[in-house]
Amino acid sequence: MSAKRIPVMEIFGPTIQGEGMVIGQKTMFVRTAGCDYACSWCDSAFTWDGSGKDDIRMLTAEEIAAELLQTGGAAFSHVTISGGNPGLLPALDELIQLLHEQGMEVALETQGSRWQDWFLQIDQLTLSPKPPSSGMTTDWEKLDDIIHKLSAHARSFSLKVVVFDERDLRYAEEVHQRYPEVPFFLQPGNDDLREGNPHILLGHLLKRYEWLVEAVIASPSLKNVRVLPQLHTWIWGNKRGV
Ligand SMILES: C[S@@+](CC[C@H](N)C(=O)[O-])C[C@H]1O[C@@H](n2cnc3c(N)ncnc32)[C@H](O)[C@@H]1O
Ligand SMILES: Nc1nc2[nH]cc(C(=O)O)c2c(=O)[nH]1
Ligand code: SF4
Ligand SMILES: [Mg+2]
Figure 1 (spheres, rainbow, N blue to C red):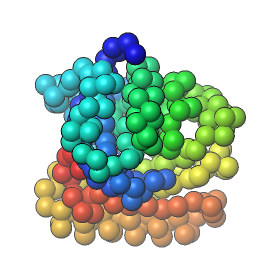
Figure 2 (figure 1 turned 180 degrees about the vertical axis):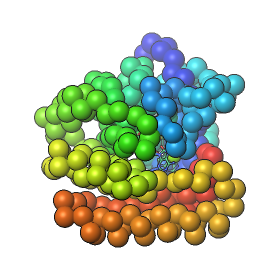
Figure 3 (figure 1 turned 90 degrees about the horizontal axis):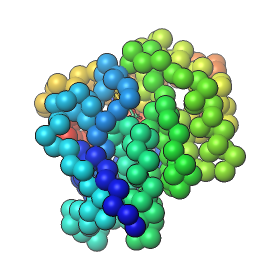
């Protein structure tokens, strides 16, 4: 293998995947730096807003795999790549191949703004297009193209839309109606990223989850969908690296 380098923000775990199609799965995380979006409510803004720039390391696939083993020991068989937007990084192909050679499953989180050929190697790919409250605009042609390619190759992937308000809910309906065959997840937005006490945050997040469940129940167009919380925030609150 060559020595392509990947901007890594943090490597942590084992923990559980707290969101989406593999919720509850024991996994390690690799969080890459850099994003082509700047969501108003991003819970990982340190990956792109400059506040975490001193923590960014340019690592090879071999170095990342070694650190995963050093951090997680022999106690895992699943790795989730998130960010930032890991979909910006062509060099991830080597990491995905190496992890597969080591017998790992590899999941990935992206907003679906860019295609990479290595998307076809990911075992569980989550596409999370952004609703109006984020301040971002969806490039529907890009998303169409990504979903078309993944479907044509019969890949295991899903859509996950974060919902903060009624307008976001209408957006989620639009996404689901556009791609009715794609497994669809809704997740309430965490609008209190500064609360340091997990118990206080939990009461608030529970209310946000109840609100979203009621809203989905009432929506005639959201039928074959799943509503999930961010489970890790129920345990660890806004703590980083869990
Ligand atoms: C930090 S992002 C990184 C991956 C990729 N950039 C993306 O947005 O899909 C991982 C997931 O966290 C979600 N997320 C970010 N901030 C959030 C918040 N305040 N509340 C709920 N979910 C949030 C994103 O929508 C995305 O599904
Ligand atoms: N436990 C845990 N689950 C997660 N699911 C998605 C995460 C992310 O930030 O991408 C995340 C995270 O940071 N931690
Ligand atoms: S796309 Fe993801 S990482 Fe980028 S700003 Fe939005 S939530 Fe944060
Ligand atoms: Mg997160």
